[in-house]
Amino acid sequence: MTPAGPGQAGPRSRRRFNWRGLLSATALVLVAVAVPVAIMPLGEAGTTVARASPCRKAVGPFTVHGTKVLAKNGSVFISYGMTVSGLQEGNWTQLITLDLAKIAATANDWCANTVRIQLNQDLLLGPNGTSFNPEYMAAVESEVSLAESYNLVVVLNDETNFSALAVRQYQNGPTAGTEVFWKDLTKVYGNDPQVIFDLFNEPRTFVVGMSSTQEWRLWLNGGNFKGVYYPFGMAQLTNYVRNTVGAHNLFWVEGPRYSLTFAGMIRHHALLHTSGIVYSIHHAQGLHNVLDWNAAFGYLVTDGIAPVVNGEFTNYEPLPDPKVHLIPGYCWVNAPTAVPQYLQYLTKLGIGMSAYQLVPGWLIKSNQHLDEPTSINPKTWSCVPNDEPQPYQSAGALIMAYFEQRNG
Image 1 (cartoon, rainbow, N blue to C red):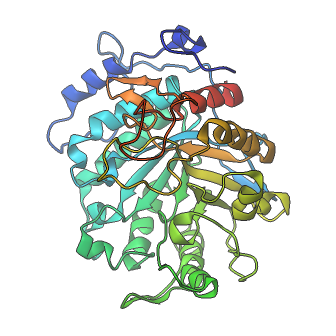
Image 2 (image 1 turned 135 degrees about the vertical axis):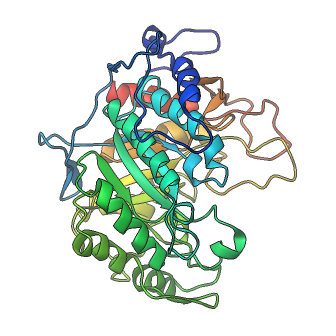
Image 3 (image 1 turned 180 degrees about the vertical axis):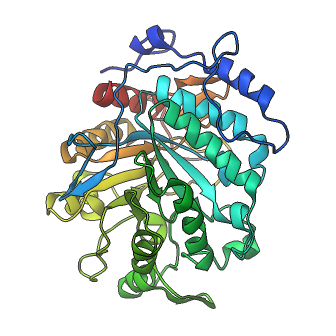
């Protein structure tokens, strides 16, 4: 499917959802941090309505069978979704309304079947994991309720990257607070067949020069890192959430070093043995070709080891500012040709994707137009900050067309 060019109306325009009406309506009921537990889509007159998207939806529970994930009816479930991140931020109360609009746009304008909601364990529990914020939990329930009202699969992700710097320094891997976080979330969603648990966002007990043996050991079992002792790693965390607190959900598990690669996991005997795991790759590095993708994560599928999802994917030009550093993996120099090839690669292997995210310049043009993606011009694409003939390009239109083609 060819995405609509500037000024052209693609097939989506015939079913465009009035998410701005939802934005206005929900703003009226969100006062300070008194967040309602469930917010349903509102019609033109303010009445609650159920809006059906023509795009396919999936129904859980979801189970792992070899390298595939099956839905309740036995069909193969491949996630096509969007990450929504307002609840990971310190000013989360000011971002809820926009989050709700993004969830609605994900379902109705982006032809997705999944939304990945990033949460912050410190906002729920405090930096030591010993308190509990009921208003924050109510906000979580509001976003999940809205997503489920659109029949979306909901991925809940535990994020610690956006805590205060002093706190982040001892949260590079899962902590006791991470276990408390999932114990609390399991009480609410552990038996919800539409909810997936993404257990820890981008483990980062890694420094340049570290041996791959140490990298995988820290990820798997914990240990000492930068003066902090991590009493456990992903092996214990997955076992705890599955078998101690009894979550029945599908798990997404991210790899070490910001989940940039799973290369070496088998060689270092780091494959997890808890049931129901999908390995989640983020922002793949390298030369962006089939050989690199196979080495980083594709081998898990082609060798019959485990299912994989691309838990975060984006391609956008950095801001035209020399002070802005290019984030590795966020802008591919060869994106005009490599991104379409990458999408074909994911399709061939049956790997899903969570696009990252509905932010101006990343996937969309503005917050006022969540349904209007940015695009890539091969003649002017540049990954060099402050050297962009046509700034604010991204793979948004390619991803939207991909979702419509695969899930429409």
